[in-house]
Amino acid sequence: MSTSLASAGTNPGRRLREAVRRHSPLSAAGLSEHVFAGLFRKLVYAQIWEDPDVDMEALAIAPGHTIVAIASGGCNALSYLVADPGRVETVDLNPAHIAFNRLKLTALQALPDHEAFHRFYGRADDARNIEAYRRHVRPALDADTRAYWEGRTLWGRRRISMFRRHLYRHGLLGHFIGWGHRVARLYGVDPRDILKTRSLEEQRRFFDESIAPLFDKRLVRWATDRKSSLFGLGIPPQQYEALAGADVRHKSMAAVLRGRLEKLVCGFPLSENYFAWQAFGRGYGSEPHAPLPPYLLKRNYEAVRARAGRVSIENISITELLAAKPAQSVDRVVLLDAQDWMSDSQLNALWREITRTAAPGARVIFRTAGEENLLTGRVNETLLSRWDYRQEESRALHGRDRSSIYGGFHLMVLRELPQ
Image (cartoon, rainbow, N blue to C red):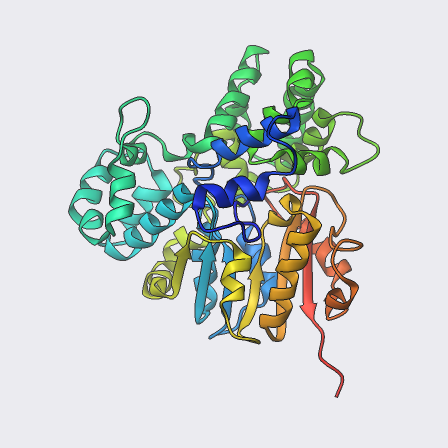
């Protein structure tokens, strides 16, 4: 999930508004877009919801590669460091995500060991994190990032306090998941009970008997049929439409979401899927061998920490970043689901820069709310002809994506120019 689109001016707030805007602000659709843009200036994703293992398999990162990516919560950008790239240059239009990523990068380098780093981001619910921030992280932060985390919310709490108050229950997505838990309990279902299952068969039974029936409830169907109800998932109005049309067999948004949740619950053992732990446990597991994103695993800690200086984060669009780079200078591009938000003109501007800056053998990955590759018929054929769409490989990779919330995963590989 992402908040970095095509270029839209120089002011961060204006960038985001113009990236989302499709309709007159006086129309109902324009008002919906305005509300969404306002929500997306706050922290949305404490954890990114794209599977980094699938990313790295598709990207085939080699030592020294330059990667350009949308940051979101930063988990994947840091996880790519395991593959030893030369640079990971990230962007995001959301200023809160910029502060979140800068804090994460600084904490990785400033905290004394893996235990402290895991307590900060793996557990993220310990009062010792605040002392660790004051002693180790705060002195190394830039002034803007420090001001953000020591600033206060509407409730009067300093933002940094969320690291002792269950970080992953915060942010727009964290609140949305909390709302989902409350609705489930209203109907007598505690989503956390799935964490007690011990096999895929038990996971399937829990889904069929407890989770699936919720999507037939009138309140759930009524709520999910409204675009604003899914803003907390990071779904803007235009992406809602793509998701609603994801499968002609589905007759409601509730049915589409039910299908995505079914894969999350039933597609992978809980012992391997930290996305399911986030959805149902609202955090990572506490067991010694609980699943974690690659950047948080102890076996990867030293390598990720040593390479953290290779990661950068800027509050600009990915098109702007690419436009400032030399030709044939980028090996890998990670777009998350940003293209679902884009107009045709934004898509073409982006792919012109991707194609211009693509080094030989360059790879691009992205996800879509719907199943199909949205580039066909929207991006100039001359540009697309430079790229090989790996359709079968993309489908296989999508099947292995543990986050399970997207309709499609897509891999594009730059073709060799004829001699």
